[in-house]
Image 1 (cartoon, rainbow, N blue to C red):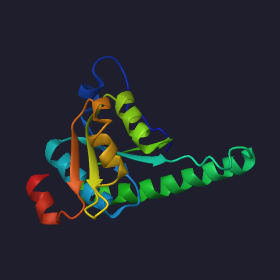
Image 2: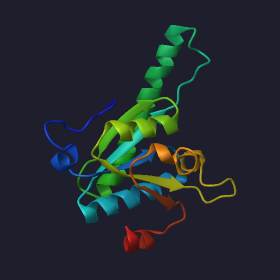
Image 3: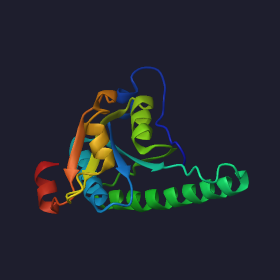
Length: 170
């Protein structure tokens, strides 16, 4: 499941496989709202959905390689489990299965790298927290200082949007 890539070939990949809506998967409440929005939007526009899970690397055990390897394997298994669950939610709202991506590193950098490397990605969809602490670190980073690193539009879906509201504007 790691670093699944869309097909490549001659010509514009975007024309060959269509547009991809990239949604970052994590364990937040607002992510499920973003997934539902992505599924509905893809259904209405004929786009594909890409789900990206980023494994943030732990540095405290890198000097013990066997422990680091075990932690990495466990993190990949967890990533696959979370992506599978998210893909199942997508299938409930949209019959087409999503493309799954797993990357390692800083979440912000992994998102930017995935977008740069996959020319089919046409939109980034992020769920935003609605609490006192702000929209979340990824939304804050990618709409602030790092927005210039992106060459695609970002759709930010507030975590408190209802299903009816998603239906009306997806």
